[in-house]
Image: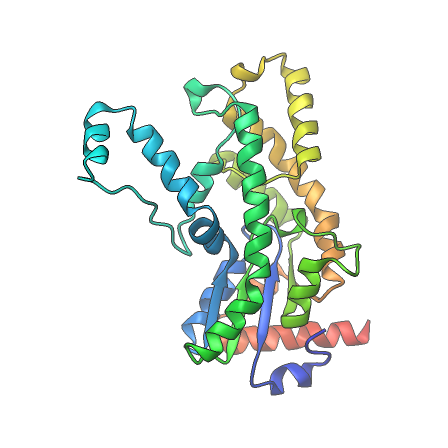
Length: 288
């Protein structure tokens, strides 16, 4: 690992972290705390995906919808209006909306074939954005003068790496440059995430085999034809399975770094607290 002891970490004048785990456990909150200290560069993988790698697809999708409205079509064709996404670290809705949900078009669903294509585009974009981490570490220091760096990874990082492979190119790239920190939730946190998702379901990325299995099972259980599926009902049914599917992948990734609990994360109030929390995690790893 980049830092092998609490002293290595606290004494370093170039602290570099990557946080990963289920969405909703505090990755972006930690990154925001550190960014607020003034000497940390915040690299958001989801933001990079939504701007550098999928920005054109997101904007084109919005333009395609606008082209179906005669007034908007005329304005677009005459370059009288501009359509683009206003994606930010805290608002990734343009990316989520583009990924979409499969099912009944009348309820906002996508044909499953189109959904699979968008999932594949996201997979390739996520891999590329993760491999950009080293570039942004260098850029943050040489261009902007930031000594410290945090990579705020997406919740689906575990879907695009193979933590059982010691030569996995993405994990090698990341672990050589950052201390990887796994955010671990309890059963109570999992239940909260499921309730939150049930109230406001959002698109997610799934591995192809997992998605195909969920889709086949849902069609068999409900008796729906693909074009009859309620998009929200499908992703609600899939979400709990996705959490169970991801848990062992995250646990395997944790061997590449250290782990902290969601309760430890929620107790941090500033950058000093985060540094202390990571030092404690390194001490636990040393003892183990």
